[in-house]
Image 1: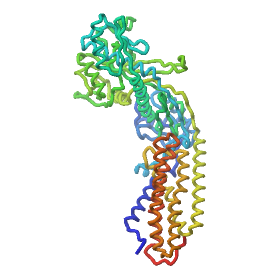
Image 2: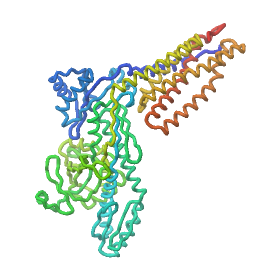
Image 3: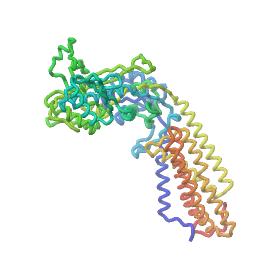
Image 4: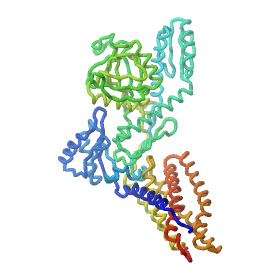
Length: 614
């Protein structure tokens, strides 16, 4: 008998619809206004902070829906935006010095759905509201950092090769290496040219060797500065609890950051603008730190202080910068004392090995460097940054170090954990400056959502009415499949990590609603043709679906390819449109061909039918 569906296909369709419906369900619960408390640089959020937060809000007569510790942060859910603002101000006064306090919107998903990893769709900036930043990387600082790094390497390698030099210093956009006689200069020139293909060396008449980076190397330094800053910014954005942030490169020196749902631009700006790096340097043990405190600092040393105000005299030469650290973790040593385990990349491991082979038993310091913007601007109108340095750790080198080593002598497990997190976060190669800031209010986002939903509902209703009138009973089947298709789109977007719904994405859903019935129109018209050619109802259904399949497949594949191209070369809103378009094509193929065939077979298949209501 024609048009009978096997049991496994019924089960497959039921399973797919059930799963998509389940993961679409969280979108019905909406979001709560919230204030979240995250870890600070020297403090860590734990569940023990919850009672203090509750007590502070209760004393201020602020009513909350809940206060919970989740995902390494305390989340305070409030009743409305006015209460949210009051709670933020109260918590900022109480905990702002030690922790990060920011306003946000958090999903109100029931716990049983969260246990299944079900969450609502991630909404883009245009739908949810939030903050848009355009950040510019200070390339001059990036290049200066590269110069400092290579100068230290030159000094170390020239000493190892027993090539005596008078000085190695940066002068403008070049490095000048001065020697005492021509023979030594010629030997150094031969050695350096062989080892540094990405630099150009020129000899001068005054026994000075001039070294500059090649254009290719400068371009590589700039590109790495942007890429590494993007990585660090993404880590900082996680402190804000943004569900689906956008952090991407724009042009040669700029980064776009979009934070949907963030309602506290000042806090977001503060976290993003903080520019920090790390250096490993040797402690100057040959000179007295007390003399340095009194103003007599040796020429090759630098006086710095710890957070507690203890002076530490360091050598100016940098052994290693934080951008060579690939991983860091805290643990305990064989005596039960806290330590931090460091892993370096290949270049960093080589530098560490050469730099510490003669320094066993000496003290090494970890220096935290932060660039803070001043009110001054340079000739190009860019902000001038002030460099602040602080010693966060000193430890004795126990053995020659390589790609992996450990930092000991740390006071507490908490300090070890904080240091490991700081090292894991990496180091910004260059300071950053926010050159553009836009805030999209939640009311505008809410209006966009309402207009988008209205467009989808009107489009869906129009299509449903047309199909019902024109195809009668088969129109009902197509309408059921169309509603299922919309639910599947929402479920798949909610399920896919990284998928974000934007306003153009909602336009993609509206387009998909129309495209979804295209397949059914082709199938139903083909069934009508088969009936007009004299075939029985069962044969008309069978050949209608079979003969229309290739046409439907070809049309959808070409549209899907167009969506892939849009996704590959497009940015921002275009990507959002292409994602929903491709998802809609995939789901409409399933509902229009598989689901409607199952429903048609269930109603008319395997039985004697004299006529079809089509």
